[in-house]
Figure: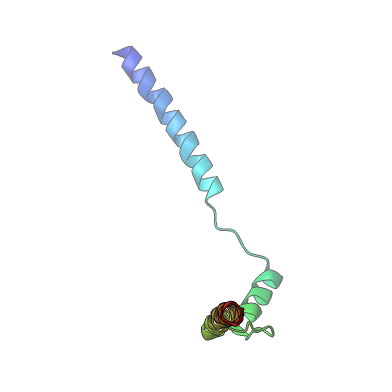
Length: 88
């Protein structure tokens, strides 16, 4: 029984030490006032740089025109080859 009492006492000291370390580490920190001021200014003011939104339809039209031009070129080449065959 004496051994159990001693172990409880040792555990109690370890727990107290652990709690003390946790309390020391979890103290509230005071932020740098200059940093807080700059952060507040940056969060509350509108940025000077704006990002333009890309037009989704622009890419569609570029692809559509490219496909049309390619199909037209194939069609014209096939028509030219047909006329050459019939003229010979």
